[in-house]
Image 1 (cartoon, rainbow, N blue to C red):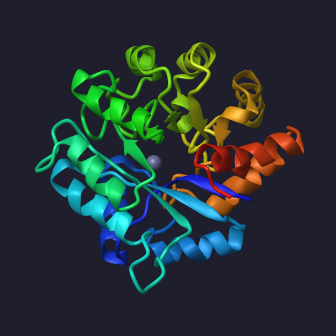
Image 2: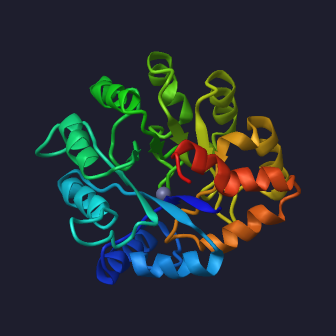
Length: 279
Ligand SMILES: [Zn+2]
């Protein structure tokens, strides 16, 4: 089973085009697709991906709509099957969001079938150890659901809110929190290893860090293998960061590394299946 643990989807081609073009213009980051659900479905077929985690987040004023869309397309109705049952919906909250409080939003979307939370401390402009987030972490632990958090450098390279060490206070207070640090710490490899060492529950995803693309924070093969061996293959999830990255090519990249077949199976799907309780 192959599971892509890090996918961004856009409701329409127009919205997707706007988002990826805006980021390309502002930061010079190239993209692979506009990222509609049907675009990604096509990639799933071509690359043999069975399930994918939608790590949706948006600015405060669009958060509620974005969350609603995320759960709506993955939920079955009374008399109809879900449109996209292969997607695992993660929603997002922030301490400054409009309307509902973060916990109210979690409760509401839990009833709609959300399976986890995505936060992007840099884009959403708060530190993971901001105590306004404590009720959120408490809620996630009680419901035994995971949080995927952007970690490491962001495209603008300016903020330190993504540094893995920003999670230390949280992990000390919530040792049972199921945390997935995206991008393996994206450039802050020393902090990644330290967190992995101290907090055995923390997981990591490969997005951008172990990839066929060539970003400033992409590891070479030797570094990738070294980091996998240091942290342990049982704690790393394949994630593509689609639509910026072609997931099929990242799978080929992981398959090409000189690690055991067992390690590859864990990274490409087994760890995610266990963590997200998928069959
Ligand atoms: Zn991402």
